[in-house]
Length: 438
Image 1 (cartoon, rainbow, N blue to C red):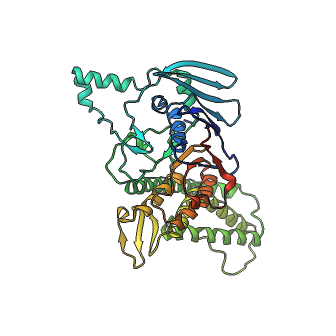
Image 2: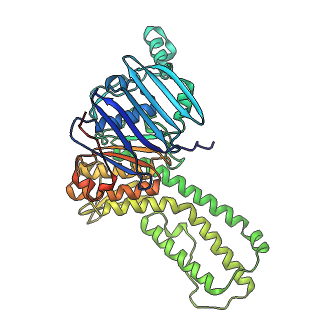
């Protein structure tokens, strides 16, 4: 099934936040990163929370964080989703594809929600009922089942349909906690190998361990695709060789083989390929004038090898970005990838270091880098709250350049709330100020 095209967010508007502040945030469409700054109390974190809440259907958030109107405008500037809270209900409106929709909805706290105050969990939801509890019924079982089935009750169908066209990921301050039920919208992984959204899999596994396991699945699925592509090409090689036309000149074949040698060497250095998984692609040892039949064979062989390696190109680029960034920050240790173990941290002497034994800052960076490089659909809206937490000043200075590179590679739009001048650095052009003037 083809995923819907996701709309890019262009503008966030808030009227009378806390009864006082008006904010307009125009996102940077070219750099794809927008930084919120301003004094304490003007609503930086709550701005992120409201974006996340509206896109996930968490209307109850607007009951706890009062405002007159909150609106999101999307890429074509004609699509706008807005809510106007008023007590226990709110007016929800959508202008989309030339149509206008409007309905009053309850500002209802979702049963799966974690209530938060400034990004810190203050309430844990009750555990989901077991299948047995639901089937047995009774007062508790029926009530639990009714609550689960009514999770989206009161939200109009046009609103729920539109939410399939947008995706949001909230990277909050407590991102190292063991994974439990979360509210995420459209959090489909970079590869179909991922077993499913983390929001559906309650777990007590530390975040770094879970990301490592997910990466192992992604890695194996990518290598399986590589194997299937290789097998198909190898099985049809004779037939395609008979039908092939002239293969080109010797110099061109040598040039392409030299590029393939460089590419395979890089894949081996990244830990993606080993000698057993790639055919030799080194240039011919001696420049030899090949006849027509030989050039046809070599040209087809080079074509096939290029196609095989193309299945690994996206994974390789993301792995390279992750390792270059993290290994440029980690001291006296390095991170590598392994198809069976996922992420492996080692000391300078080669001793394995458990991932959850890394410092909190090192774990923060690994989790954040993984989520940005492997956990997002194209055009996802990424909300990052206080990325400076647990980061040394030197790492804070590296955060924004990395984020800009990742946003380009993964094609997401990020809104960052920060107090750190080291995060911003010299990129004042990316900043949007939230004024404390009423």
